[in-house]
Image (cartoon, rainbow, N blue to C red; front, side, top):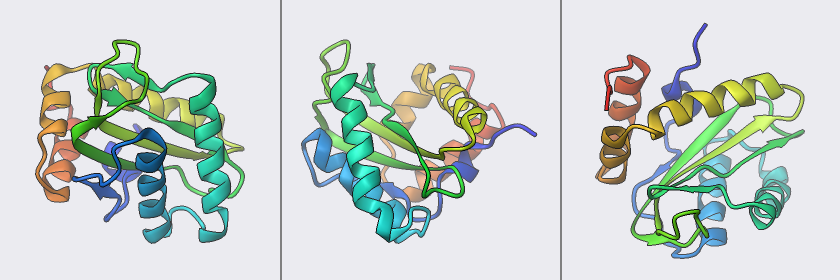
Length: 160
């Protein structure tokens, strides 16, 4: 069965106007959304945040083109999940192209299922490589627009 992007992102796990203008704060906002959606146990929030930030300090997940995909595997996570954050002003992720990041997709996976993590990353990057998808994601006005975009991508409607 193919991985569906829409299944990765729980209802309520999209922030179309990130409040934080810095990388660490933006990641914290997205983790807080996943806690609110009960995709990340509240007791694991701080550890998940520290693990994601530790990974960012070693190597930025800002791959360029206005997109970052911070990700981590964690023992407290039972089901793979993602949160999406959009920033109108952009966030400095120390991306390869030095451009601000406007779209952040935070992926958190169970530690004991690395294949599932890899499949999710492949599915995300398949869409994020497409200019049309990136542009539509960055300009989404609300969660409904993001979810529609993900549903269209799941049907591979974006040929970009």
